[in-house]
Length: 393
Ligand SMILES: *Cc1c(COP(=O)(O)O)cnc(C)c1O
Image (tube, rainbow, N blue to C red; front, top):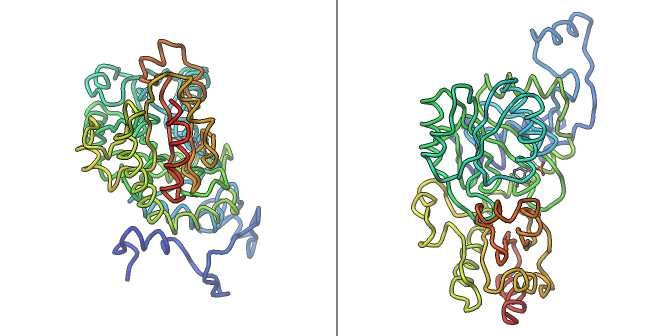
């Protein structure tokens, strides 16, 4: 049976593995910086690219390659390049595909560090970014200029879980000669495959759900052979933000349970969203799985489940929100997500704390808003931990 016939769960466990003559069952870790050649002629042929094979682990490494091929198979892409972090996946994509004088249109609801990368660092090299509301297709259209090369988004957004119509944005991007890049960190290919909806490139922070257990920092770029296999890979082997073999080995193990975990994270988040929606102390819940979510039907179409992240608003602003945070005994107070451990964040004073009051209001981040990334603990314990603070409001 050919890998192309396998379903996602099978690919997650088996794709990309090539056994050595030791017949190992698990994927081995190749901790080696370089590789040897059989002869001077073979060295020349490999350096010229005439002969396939490893040269140096900044370029390729067998453990990293297994991870890349497995993730490419899961996303339905031709090529994948693994990177040292999610941020270096975004940086590598931008530096490989953009040049001075180019313009980017980005959702304004993206990871805060990505905003800093665009506004502070890409701007230094003459690449300008315009930010638009994620779900406003007309605003995306209006922001595209003759020099726009790339549209960038995350869906669902963090923390308000707004859902973008990937197919509609891909159509717009291609009509205007731009590439659509989707950061698929929140859903992972287990729940959403942006390339199937016409996106050109998928970005991952493997640090989150791909590892799933909060152990290592890593990232990846997935797309076609030309854009990713040649252009992004060319930048990576030159600039060097490569993934280590050890981390690739951890992420491979993460991929093997990804589908099971994402289904559980989603089922639990839905249960918690319903619970909080009916809770007398909660004003509003943001979760795409709730029928009153503005893009509920789109999420049903585009995603296999609704993901592990939700946000909710309590009456009483920052004081009340902090009371919920400070009365937890089990939940981890951290801005991280994608872990087996449930995490709680107060976005207004952490992830969105650098924004001005007006910017925060425009982004819909109220002082009473809390974000939960639902882990794999018993639901009864998660609810009880939140109830302690909620009941004091
Ligand atoms: C965490 C995160 C990143 C950055 O990834 P790192 O691995 O921390 O560099 C990018 N995008 C999203 C959506 C994230 O959550």
